[in-house]
Length: 217
Ligand code: G3P
Image (tube, rainbow, N blue to C red):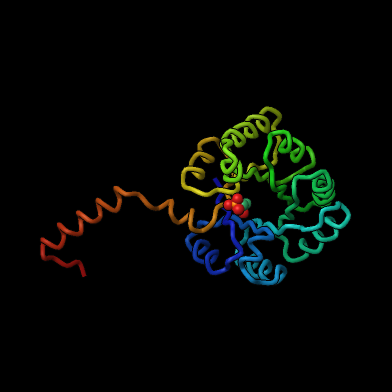
């Protein structure tokens, strides 16, 4: 499974990237706001740091303007994946970008029907939002499983990018079902290292080691 990091915080990206944990980055308008940075400047810095796809999102709502914005974003670096919302205009822009050879991430996907349309429009990635479905008491994992089955039935090449991942369980369930990629905040990726029995076991080893009176260095 590929790991994308869902942030525009360059320090956090660097820390994970140095450990080999970053196969790509996703951003959105809310994450750009959180960074307090200029979209073109921060996206360029991320693209220079990470060799995999870096999603940068358009904000227009009509296809013609989306295409103009996306073409400008694509000029930032060759590893830009233009991110468009899953609306009819977004699908129109997706098709235009894909025909020009650009990577496209179709975002805000909440149904298998939407995912099927995105694949037909040539999306490189489809981003089903797991956490936001859980927020309204639906099971985001059912959506990942449905899309996996549909894409496999017809051999669609669009990669399933499990998004709005809020917990380790979301990450692991997505991997179990067979999402190609997950994008998660740095805090979720780091918390994947945690286990209460690891902490307990380490605590015991350190107590016993102290009793030996020995030193390694
Ligand atoms: O990748 C999508 C993500 O940024 C949305 O996450 O937690 O705001 O639903 P969240």
